[in-house]
Image 1 (cartoon, rainbow, N blue to C red):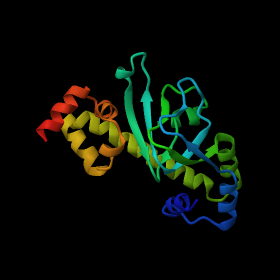
Image 2 (image 1 turned 90 degrees about the vertical axis):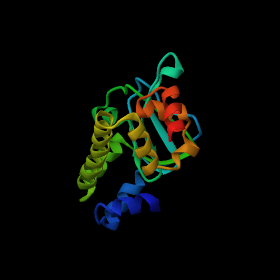
Image 3 (image 1 turned 60 degrees about the horizontal axis):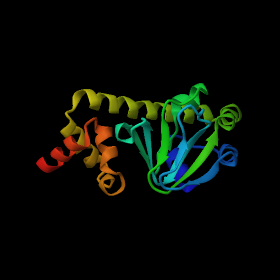
Image 4 (image 1 turned 180 degrees about the vertical axis):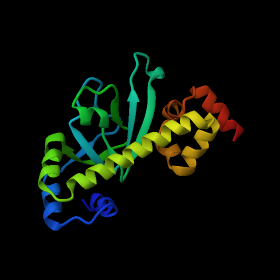
Length: 189
């Protein structure tokens, strides 16, 4: 709970009453390594805060080698199939824990109650959504403006621990190249 409190304290000052109401709605969950905890066509009913672990967002394919990894979330970040969560419509992608992952989750209905009941809920919700949008926009711009090699270098400058945690096949998909092309990039560097 202290991690999410520290994260939210960066955004706004939360009264004890609001904090107690919010935390009463949180559920701690442990997701085993490699478990898919949201599947395609399921409706996302949670937004979660990662206390520890790594989550991959991806589009599955019949041939697992053709899966498209388009995002990762890490400790002290929120994770959700956010578009499905907001619209309450089926997800077009999956969420998978790449390591054992501990999350604090709130359901869609409980979050609506937090928005209605607390003084700070809507403000925090808006700022969190804005941060998620900014990350998504930055990723799209990187895909359009940077070469694959530049995307690879940027990824590991920002997150050097990834090499130890995330299989290279997911990293190659994330930066938009084949595993062979990533291998050539790594040899050049």
